[in-house]
Amino acid sequence: MGITKTDLFTEKQNELAKVAKVFAHPARIAILEYLIQSNTCINGDLVQELGLAQATISQHLRELKEIGLIKGSIEGVSVNYCIDAMRWAEVQNLFQGLFDGFPKISGCC
Amino acid sequence: MGITKTDLFTEKQNELAKVAKVFAHPARIAILEYLIQSNTCINGDLVQELGLAQATISQHLRELKEIGLIKGSIEGVSVNYCIDAMRWAEVQNLFQGLFDGFPKISGCC
DNA sequence: ACTATCTATCGTAATATTGCAATGTTATAA
DNA sequence: TTATAACATTGCAATATTACGATAGATAGT
Image (cartoon, rainbow over all chains, first blue to last red; front, side):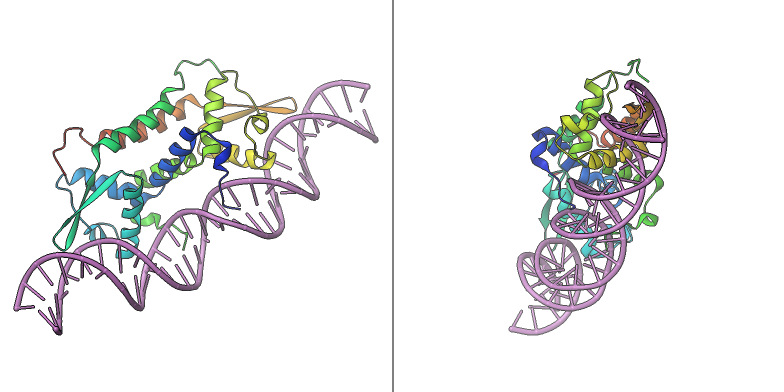
């Protein structure tokens, strides 16, 4: 079916899954890493950096923007993108919450 | 196309994306949380816990197993699943590496 | 052997994602 | 106004994911 039965799960589970989906593509990881590294909030010469078409990059940027991880400000004819620090921390905590739930010294299998 | 151009990205970016994809479904999050909570490494009465069909759960378990996050040991007629602590920590570090790459005090936009 | 139980796999339908060419949109420059 | 440059959107083809019924495989009990 390709459709997810979100009503079966908690809001937090759905939110975490939705955020994880945004991380689930190497191009979006690459974009985030590029934005982090080039502190100067670079715009879409990501097309040069990655080898994807302009339309494709734009689509990935939109998904990152929709989940709130980045924001873009119009700078003349081009758009400056950058990480949204607040949301970044929020998402980090979401993941950390899951990871920390598992006790490191659990004498299981 | 639905196909990802993995050759354009680094191994680490592809690996992180692949792992994130496993987290990108609430059922798999729910399974992991259930495994964490029920320390006793419970098997597929996840079918009871979540409201999905047995075949569907089995499919999700396989994806979690393939990425290495869980492992199952046959216990008579049933299978005991549990978190793989080593891999869990490894994956946690993968994500943390990305998150920590962004300095909290970045005077950007 | 026969049966019941648990889990995995196969096949299939419905939906989602990825990628790009073509086309819009907006802002600057001449 | 016209042209140009930078993005965004649309529309489409190819592929991936999700879900489940049906079926197969393995094990325990009788």
